[in-house]
Length: 112
Length: 113
Image (cartoon, rainbow over all chains, first blue to last red; front, top):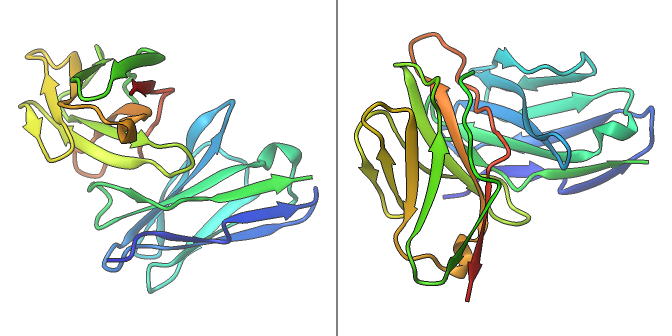
C-alpha cells in the first residue's frame, strides 16, 4: 500500500514569505503529526491531528499552524518565514494516536 | 517526558549481532519503550516497541530489563542497510495522555563491510 506522501519534496522561500506543506497519510490512518528536523535541534514535535482536531502542540511560535481535512490529509503553514525555519519537515501518520507512526520522506525547506 | 540516554555512536561489522543500549531510569509504569531508526535521507522508521516483556519481530528484538530502567535493541545480523541513527523513545500510553514521540539525539550505528 502507498506510504505517507509529502509534497513538495524541496522548497526555497524568501524571508518574510509564507509556505504551505502538504501531507497525505496512509489510507485508513486518522492521526497525522508533524516534526521539524534541524542539525542543531534534532527532531522536534510540532503538532498532531486526529479526526480534524489538533490534539497536541509542541513548543513552536504561533507562526506555525496546521490543519487536517475530513479525508485525513493535513497541511502545515509557516508564516513570516525566518532563516531559522530552514529544516526538514516530516509528517507521520498512524491508524490511531497511540499506534506506530509511519513517516514520509519529508519536505526540505530552505529560507534565503 | 521521561528521558532516555543512548551512546552517541556505535560501530559493528556486517553479519555480526549489534546490541544498542538505552537507559531510562525515570521510566513510569505506563511508558512504552519505542525504537525508531532513520536511514540517511529518509524519514524515521518504526522498529519495535514493548512494555515489560522482551519482544521480537522481523527486524529486531527488544530486551527489557526486569526493573525497566534500561533496554537493548538487538539486530541479530547487521547489514549495511542497518546503518542509521537509532532512537530510543518513551511514550506514555495511559488513557488521555500526550502520545507524541519525543526524539533524543539517538545512536549513530556504522556497519563496516
